[in-house]
Image (cartoon, rainbow, N blue to C red; front, side, top):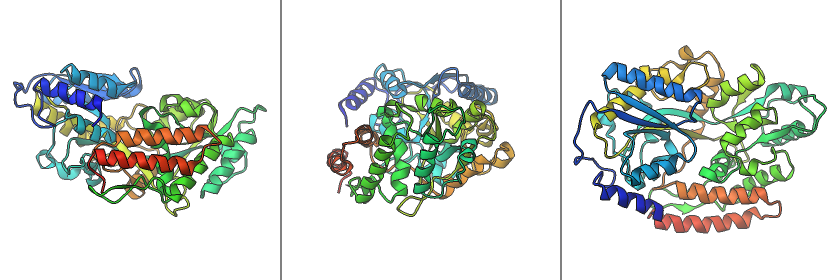
Length: 438
């Protein structure tokens, strides 16, 4: 447990809100109390309005008032500050990968899937993303997604290339996009890859994880409390070397070493980079920016490991500790996971979707969306994706690996093998700290 985390837990416990992710029996309950909902969206983005539409529909159905607050920058920091001030929101809609941290901080309530209405309609894979290291669930699923490769199809056709089927094809296409003037403007101003390579929120590791798994590498070996670092494997070293070479060959958009997603997306929007491994939420945005029919979505080709495995993600509805309306919290989570809530969140094919892939198996995605690229994402999520490793708190591993990956990508003289050996030692220490190492 980090010092910051300990401080947060101490502050929460001091306020009598929870007893380590448990109930808030001390807080007087009011089934009509307003629900304050925090969602990780850029303020002013279309997704903020869709979030408000979801809450409005819930209020109309139940009579329970709601207030939606969209926060994007430093969301987790602001959540910690709210916990310290004993002023947590009632509901948080945020990444599945934040589960372990929230549980470790003791600021979310446990959820019994058996007490969630129509629980059988929610996919098992989505429920798995709400299960913490202790085997208990601490959220209700809301949205799922997997990552796929966005390619400027007009550029690809302009340079006479086929859809990449191998990593060698990816390298070749990246070089063509960089050197062959795919936009035909006569300027040397295009690149192959768009990469959010910043260390902030662990983006460098978040991005590279799909490539690592597709190469046969992994972060850990073992399971349960018998985990051991595997990040120093030959497969991982080869993948990191490949990643480093892309930067050193200058097929990656300059500045990507410090780019978060908010900075990376415009590289694709503006016609600077032609390939981007990212999520389905960018389809409408990219179409609007570069023109419909110019953006194709394909699975990441299988790597040297012989398989293609993409990062699975999504968002959960977290029921925060200390709420004065616990019954209302559950009702909102149930509504958000219901067909009605899911359809509002999907927002058809329009920009602003907050439900990327429905977690409710009764929702017919094809009836809600006409863009066939959504089906590509759905197939990848169903057949060729995995969530981040299950450890008590993934964030320290995400951050330390992002720091290593970013450092190697930023320095063409860095030795990936020795850097990963050092990272593996850090992993071992952290596993021991979290009592997950065998």
